[in-house]
Length: 368
Image (cartoon, rainbow, N blue to C red; front, side):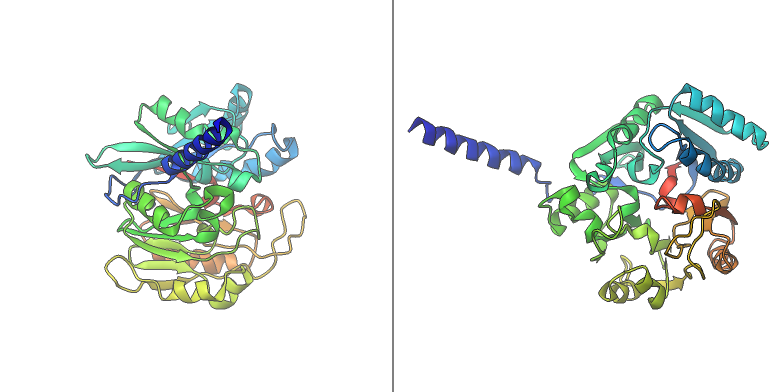
């Protein structure tokens, strides 16, 4: 009898723990995430280092980070995360050698696992009083596919150092910044393969995820794509192939290129038919893939093309991934037409792309 009672209590306890974990379906908006094109205080970068993947890995990426910093400091602060004091001094030397003023640059020294600050970094939102706060979502290395313990601590460290209120969402949801697109007017675009994946949020329903995104990001209109799990490390993040240029414009690719990106046809149809929170269809702007498969600056031939959709909007510039490809100029021109008040700057991402990411993946905005 005692064994039966202990077993029953264990079951009830387990159920209670699961019940506590389940997110509330309360849909009251408590925070709002501004669109990326809103005015920035600055941009966060996690600088490549040698401590995870070696010195060659670091050295092949340095030039991309120098160019991003050079472009961004003309219009905003750049917050650089260095692995340690030695790396900080090395980065300062790189910037000075490139003739870049340090007046708008500050450094935080935190150990990191890698460079993907879009996914593991702080998410800045406004609370109901209009105050800026930092949300610290769960990060588990895209479903425990990579080391993540250091990077998962970055938002908490930044909140402490900057003195911002921290909203701890680690136990509520695993959510990478590149997994969601926000248009600033209530619409959220995401793939189920990255959000509702058992390797991140086991058992979570779409309804529960929407309630969380409404409460913490201010989303009220949802465009869910199925996506594809297992193709690459992110399980098909949305920011590789679809972005909001404004509350009325959706940037993506043509059908042929989306299929080459392995986006399911049903998702392509849904993208092209997407409507914003006022039930108005988005204007669809299509960027090409690269004309050729990408080859790194050190001669490694990749067996896939590059996306231009993964650009980053700064205060005075738009950083566009470039690949030494004929379509660089085509994509840059289209993106320039979308942001006439900003200067498009092509950033060579060939070496970075060999590691699975582009410009948007390694930047994170801090709103004004």
